[in-house]
Amino acid sequence: MAGCIDFYDLYLSGSMQALTGFYIFTGFLKQRVKPIVCLLFAVSWSLASSLLGADNSTEFVLYALLLVMSGIFLGHADRIAIIFYASLAIEIMHLGYGIVDSLLMLSYPLLLSFGHKTVGIIFLILGDVMALTGAVFCYWLIKRSFFCDQTLKKQYVFVALTPILLLFLMGEYMQAVLGANSGPDLTNGSGTFRYPAGYQILVIQLLAMASLFCTLFAYQKLLENFRLSTELSLLEQEEYSLNRYVEEARVRYEKTKSFRHDIQNHMTVVKKLLQRGNARAALDYIGDMKEMADELSFPCSTNNPAVDILMGNKLRVAADMGIQVDCSLLLPCPCPIRDIDFCIILANALDNAIHACEKMDDTAEKYIRVTGDMQGDFLLLEIENSFQGEGIAKKGTGLSNIKMVAEKYQGAMNSRTQGTVFFLSVLLIIPQH
Image (cartoon, rainbow, N blue to C red):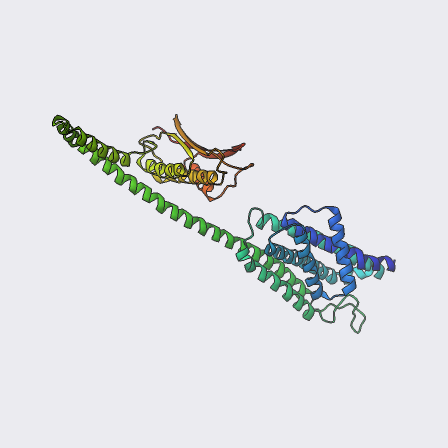
């Protein structure tokens, strides 16, 4: 019996702990690991720990290095994320085993009634089962609550990594100080078990676990605040640019009104020149009038001055890059949708389309097609463009802004790819009344 207990304590228990920590670590990295890799990790840890015979602090460093090397071997390129998740996995295991050990130590007097051999088996097996179950549960709770859709930011990772390391070191120090000269085999003068500072150690470990969750919660909120601040800054810049489009549209509209007002005078001048037989001067004058008209005309007439300016600028940029452009967009007038919202949708969509075409080979066919039609209470905008590559395009801030505007008007956005063509559809609800 004693030999089995020793074998379990020296090899199986340590391997189970190492594998559980490795499972938590790879889970954070979202890596699927083959059984042979898990076996190699357990064997490597057992050999390294038995050969070095390290204490707790050295074991932490050794195990952390082994996890980091495993993360690099698995092909995860982000070294900062590997270090962070390795420390987090070790701290979860450390607190899980610490809490369970404290509970078992406090219940040791009750278990002595079953005999020393039985108590030894219970301490080994029950302790490991409870600790591993608690560690896996904490991992599941942390991953679900804090890392479901949140991306780890390298520039802010030390905000969370530093408290995690501090929790581990403080836990080790406090346990060494408060638990000095205590253990399940120690007795006082009367021969009864004593475990000094047992409750204090348990409370510290529970507070450390709560502090870990609080640290991750604060870190997640910090990342959300940075993300929202960045998006707000981008939206403010975008709104400033779009306001410039609106102002330019109004100026151009005033020039158009002025040109239309003066057109009668221009026609009179041309008529007088022709009556005097000065055809050459009349043709030059007509040419000047055409240049003025071209400056005031829009390549795409949408029935909205602000959108006309935006479409003219974007499509002119696309045409200069050798991209074929086609626009058949007609917007209702009057329309309850703000000009800024129309510009957010079309500016982001056209910027993405131009960027996609720009990345294509020079020999490839590049085109952008914009269509829009009002059907009942629904306005459907469709942007189609060529792109190089396969799969679904990544949804960045541009598409997120488009989706936000669509939902503002109880509509929806949909994007899809078909071969080398990207389709973006935006549906807006515009009640006719």
